[in-house]
Amino acid sequence: MKQMEISDYKGRVKPSWCPGCGNHAVLAALKKSMAQLNYQTHDTAIVSGIGCSSRFPFFMSTYGFHTIHGRALPVAIGLKQANPSINVIAVGGDGDGLSIGGNHFIHAGRKNPNITYIMMDNEIYALTKGQCSPTSRIGTTTKCNPYAWTADRINPVLMALSFNASYVARGYSGDIKQLEKIITGGLEHNGFAFIHIVSPCVQYNKVSSFEKIKELVRDLPQDHDTTDRVNAMKYAFAPEGLYTGIFYKTERPTYEERYKEVISIAQKNLNEDFSIKDVIKQFQ
Image 1 (cartoon, rainbow, N blue to C red):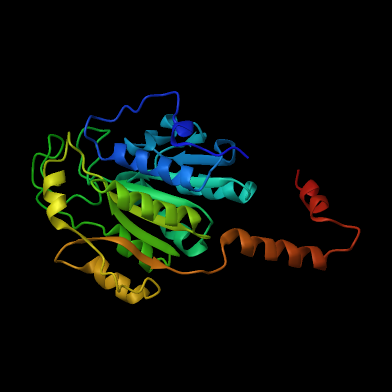
Image 2: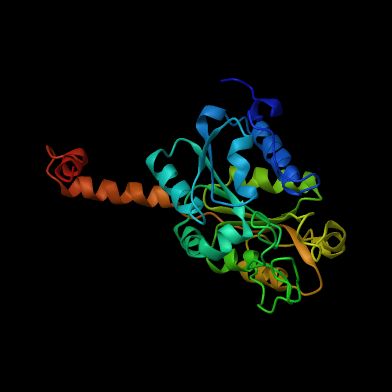
């Protein structure tokens, strides 16, 4: 097996994000984490939806699947189910994952598929030039939304915790060392790993700039118990700042492991000369 270097993950397409976009840091951190874990390009697939961050697969040398808006998670889950031996990483933005894709986010948490989901949150629909998104702050105004935004924000970390995602973390694209740490942890985790990354948009969102976000960001306390989901929710709720780090981590059976159990039970109930392949053939 080849020992992978960061440069091995460089795709043929040059990143087309705006200069200064936080997504550049996420791309760099993911490459570092994959090299650290020696992820082989032919054994890795990156699945995305629609949006600025969903261009991700084009910038990597792994397999990639650019799906339709909001559908990255079901495609990623299906891909892992079809071939459990590969590493599956889903990526997308706050609009893609919390608006049209919000329902899939709920069910991914409860099913616990063995995939990693990286959500780059810039609190705006940047690809459509500045529409407000599910995480836009009240009072936000843009060229597309000239009047103050009035809807409450969605809290992605709190959502993931309430759905019982088995690994929940938050990072900030201004801190690439921490990003690498929590992404590596998510890739190593056996189960659904959700990584929320605050990734400011330098072009269309002046409300949540790097400067303003930096004032809010603070590390979770060193003594935070990552097995305590209720306490993790308290930090996700915290009004005094934007906590980053690993909020919650637990081990429970994955979707793929439970599926194997079902197949095993079904095979035992069948005649010894009648395999599951024979059952499948009946429906072809």
